[in-house]
Image (cartoon, helix red, strand yellow):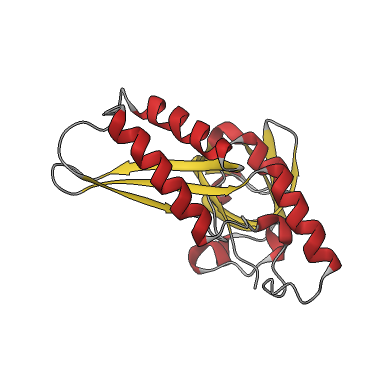
Length: 201
């Protein structure tokens, strides 16, 4: 299955583009009889810009109050259903997931979407994010023993190789609450194990 995942991803990209959608992420989980292929989609950049412009012009658009428009995927149930129908057909015809049955799940990435590519960090600069690093990172201006692996803060800058979080933008919890006295931390992108947006509602 590992050898097929890139082919499946490329196929999902192609089908998504035909529906004016972008593939955000794709996961294949489970084994034997309980296999699940999860696909996360959003409207393509042109469609998102169009929806955002309409939302800015129409205060009655029904968008969630206080949620940054850029974090919305604008994907509808109909978009997901249409994509699932076409993508499922291609998967079956080309036998890209051989063997037993599998479940195909298609949805938006949600308000707490994962940040997976450098472009995501550029796009969501200014947003609250939560991340975990591979190795502990000392806070800006703090001693090495104050290093931590878990951070929540506002992404203030991203230069393509490292990002800076404003930790004062959110109340820290648990051990981090006592450990964090600095206001910012700079982290190399190569040291980010996983990251996601934090919903601001």
